Structures are given as C-alpha cells and as structure tokens.
Length: 63
Image: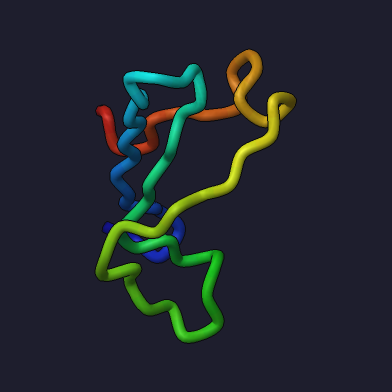
C-alpha cells in the first residue's frame, strides 16, 4: 500500500425500533490525522440526510 491509499471498514447497523442508522468507521485514514495514526476502535460517525443520499459513501477497500 502506498501513502495515498486508505484502508477502512464501514459498518452500518439498523436499529430494530427505528429507521435511524448508525455508522462506525475504523482503519487507517492517511489524510484525516496529522499523526497518521490508525483508528483502533470503531468510532461513531454522525450523518445528515444529505450525506447519506445518493453515492456519497463508497467502500474504498471492496476491490
């Protein structure tokens, strides 16, 4: 892997009693941290309706 690639896992969990979704991200995101340290545990990501509409989220390591 070169320095321009990002490795991450994205997991969407549906809540049974709500239509709200929770997204957790973890992995190595080289452009997001000045320390370039990996996210070692799942971190909640807050989403707005406009950010989840259409093709704004892609699987970057799905091959």
